[in-house]
Image (tube, rainbow, N blue to C red):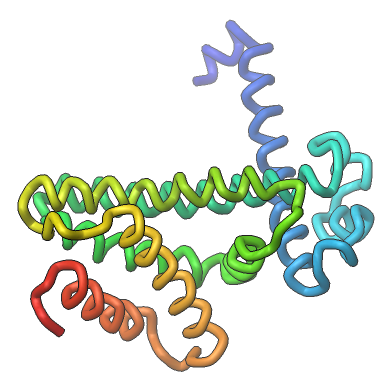
Length: 217
């Protein structure tokens, strides 16, 4: 690593610069999601985002052309993390020889863990799904479908393998499973915080087993 940096310093410097920029963006995302969750998109200013992130206002505009672009990229970033966590859960289950139902159950757990880690982002995401006329509406629909598509893929493989009924409406069932996790997790965090993640996961697992796998509640 040291030798490579000496031989190609500009490339190494570029990687460091890129890493710093990603770190700065992560700070801006965190600041933006917290403020917007607290006081709404319109009421949140670029000055406030910069102050909360601990950077100069110009840094915001260096990374994003506008507050709207920042929020749009925040949605991409956040849902991208969710999609990655779902895919990782499915892949790890497959690698260990688990069934497709087991993969779906692992994805439920991964979704709960994501939401408990990023509750403010999840609240914003769910709220924005039902708003109309937003500049980022098309982006939101695209990233939503990316997350749902991961679940669709596992359901489709389960049907093809004979684990799941061919009567399953794959697109609707996938959307329902993602929606179930989102709403149940937000309800858990807001109204039943005394419950453990294991408790919530167990309850949703029973729904999965009874309604998708067909093994009975």
